[in-house]
Length: 417
Image (cartoon, rainbow, N blue to C red; front, side, top):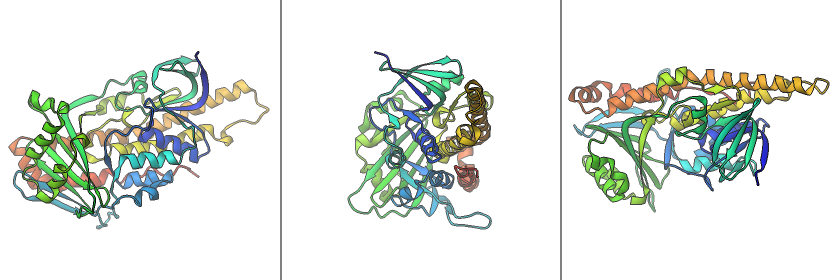
């Protein structure tokens, strides 16, 4: 039998953006319901770079210090060409000139999601709740779930990833494929790995790789490239071949670093196509419409070349919670003497305006990061001799500095007051 649930705010997707938004709202005294299609917390991938802009967001929702205690602070980035064997850039993360200290850690994705979930009230996340349809009922949106449940909501937030149903409803096209793929992995060791706490980046002819320690016993790594043969495209079906392929490409990598890829178990190799939303579509599209909006990968899928995908999702969550709180705050509501219909109409206007404000604040930031990441990835993974030469001799420091520039953004606190 069909059940109808009525909610003020429904968030589709218990990923980084969805959980951050929900926790931000909770900190401001506003409840929300998060719908997750999986039967448990879903962790896709192993780790992600959390730059200083994202630490500001994590501090805003009150989980920054929990994650700091679990992960190493990195002290610099070192870029090496596997074509020439030479170091092309070495940039410390300490303060220099007009640049403040840069805080970056490689954070385990599971630890991040659990830190957010553990701060939410019990019952906030409804698992096994796949949305199969969205319809309008006046100002309300009606969500139809696969189990027959219907949910009526005043606000619908799509944080449902790169294949977002909510983004599709808003008119966004499917995210574009770059032609590139990424293989990611994570190695766990019994005793300390002994690696320096640095972001070690490597570029070769047509590929890019990175190795980053998360904590004393965990090392995360990635490898991105553009497949040129059917065999390469079919690596996903054969983890042993995938591992062999990566190690062959990285044969010139220092053996003490390559060791951690060699010692990654085959079931800890993850291959995925790299997708992005065309900046022009973000510029012209509906980030919000009426009482519906999107955040995270549903809004701005991007290539991983700046390490800003998850960071921007955290920014989205803080800013969206802050904007929505203005619509639901007690001060915004009229006293009991006003007619109920008038109050509801006013609330609807406030909701629509708050989501427009969020969209305006996030649109240009997203366009900037998507476009820069795409260009940086193109240059770093170039196969042409000329671009490779320029990358290694001239552009290496410039490319590394782009990482710092995009991480200087400040999403602000949850409360404007």
